[in-house]
Length: 99
Image: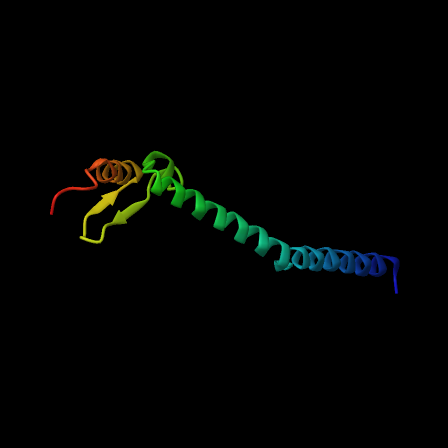
């Protein structure tokens, strides 16, 4: 085996090991999954708290500017600002209105 072939073989093995190590790290779901789950649960808890306090500014801070929503009665609000305005209006409405 020539020196050139030996160096090329060693380089290929090193690159293959680095490539495999990269995927092994990325594929270790245990710690990442647990951390992701904690973050998601924390976000949901924060949003529930915002909703129950009727703090729609904080609630909507988790949405992107280009988010859309269709309400249960078919109203379509395009963009976070319109959605936030709608929720603020709903949450400012009298809660104990006569039937």
